[in-house]
Amino acid sequence: MTVDVKAAILGAFHALGDAAYLEKIGHENPPVFCALLGKTLPKDIKAEVAYTLGALIEESMKRPAIPGDNARVIEHQELGSLGQAVARALS
Image 1 (cartoon, one colour):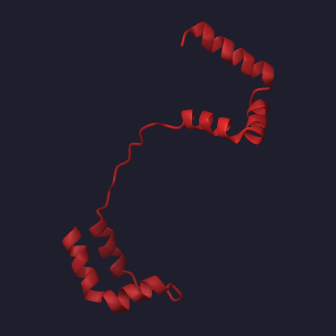
Image 2 (tube, helix red, strand yellow):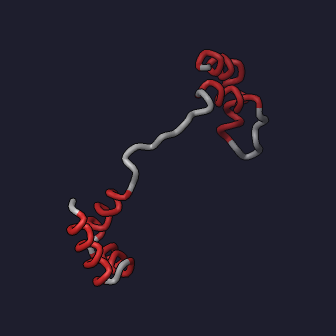
Image 3 (cartoon, helix red, strand yellow):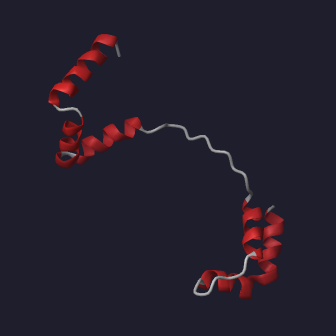
C-alpha cells in the first residue's frame, strides 16, 4: 500500500467520524467490523512456559482440597498416589 493510498484511507476515516464510525459499523454490520478487528490482532503470540504439566499437577496435589471444590476432593481422595505417579511421569 502506498503512502498516498494510506493517507486517503485515513482521511476518509476521519471524515466519516473516526471511532464513532467504527462503532456504527460494529452495530450495523458485525461481520465487516469483526473482519477489520481480526486484522488488528497479532498473528503470532510469543509466550514462555515456566511449568510443565506434570509440575502443575504435582503442585496441585500438595495443596489441601478446598471445601465445596468437588474436583479437588475427588483428586485427593480417589486419585491420591495415582495422581502423584502421573505427575512424576509427566514432569
